[in-house]
Image 1 (spheres, one colour):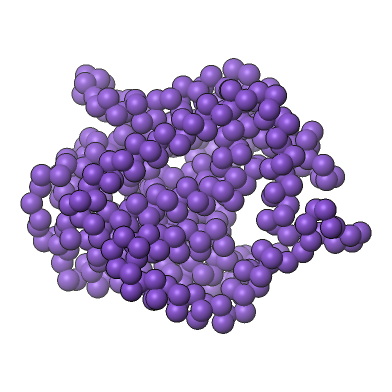
Image 2 (tube, one colour):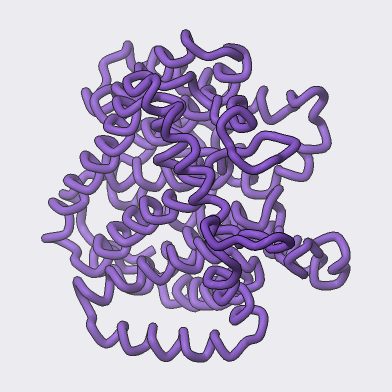
Length: 405
């Protein structure tokens, strides 16, 4: 395990990546005034990345800049107009770590064997979070919210754990279906067990947007490769709807009144509430349509534009509204360009491995759809794995032979 290119390249990054899915409880405990070891860890990742670039004499692929460059430049420019530049800069530093994780992979994924190791490495990172789940089930009081019991795993919020599980499930499914690699039978048996556990845990997080993300991933695979999976998916969803907790979460989307028909004493459901917030922010977006109000300032202005009385600010719960408010339409365009470049590269690889590549395409599309109702850019630990893996497939060389591992 310690002879792989990742460990030889950077032992520090090896351990940071492997245990990042398990560190949220520790990092939350160290926070003082909103800053803790998590901020230092982010700084370390960016420093390690620039050290790697320096060691390569900055002779680097143009894709380091053209995929993420516009989004990063516009984000930095938006900080200049932010009313809280310190907070904007601190928050935007997370974006720099995503970019670093995406580009980092170029240094240690040089062939298919390296990519196979990185896939196994990421899947096995789920072991410690699953151990946390075991203790959550033994002591459920700590994971009980206003929506009942929800699994957190080792993450700070059920939603982050849920999307991490979507990623792990997707990678397990990829390892089972891909024709590009041949994995050992022993590893595939382990993957099937992890896949089963991930699906159960995902249901128990009660995160509807993550459920939808996984449905989209399987649907894309079914439409592009094996249509029979649409039937499997349909039957599975029918079975899940027999579970009362799943029914309640799904029906909650359609319950409650719209803002136009709201009576005294009634409250909006979560989706209607979000739509009111999105529409209320439009006038502010129109005031600064190019560079926005500054990165991560939506919550700063929230009480100024939200029409219903509240006592604290909230984020947009929509990546596209959040980005447009913070960074303007230029920022939104740059954000979408990142995925355009990645999907273009994946479509080229699709010709060589339809089964595996269609699953990764499904993962990317599911991430984009989930952005409609979630603050995807704020889920730091999940984004590290997500962008690292996309970097692996983006920079992967296509000339390697198939090998058993």
